[in-house]
Image (cartoon, rainbow, N blue to C red; front, side, top):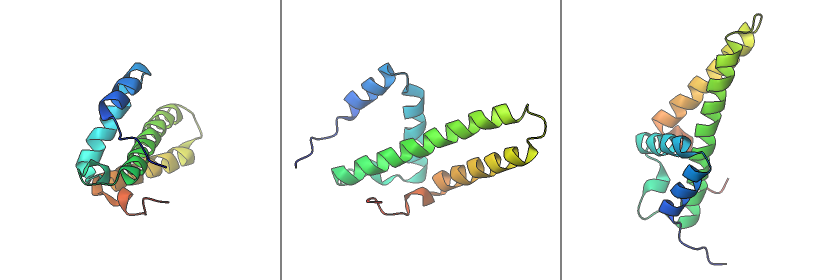
Length: 108
């Protein structure tokens, strides 16, 4: 099976029209900071797609954790849950910033 070339501009337009433009920008910024493998011009298309999805998933998870933290902050008796959410968010942010998010295999 032959894969069609990835049309980044069309993907950005589609995601922007679907209300995801801000998240795409966050993925691109995080990818640039962390040396994302999918940014390499010589990256195989299949690997680039897997890695881009991985970056999107990580950025989406960070956003979800931020939202959960904002809500948990106002709920009495949720100190432990708040600490766990914050620890997960902080660890994921560090992994993105350090580039360790890319250390697992692209085929996983």
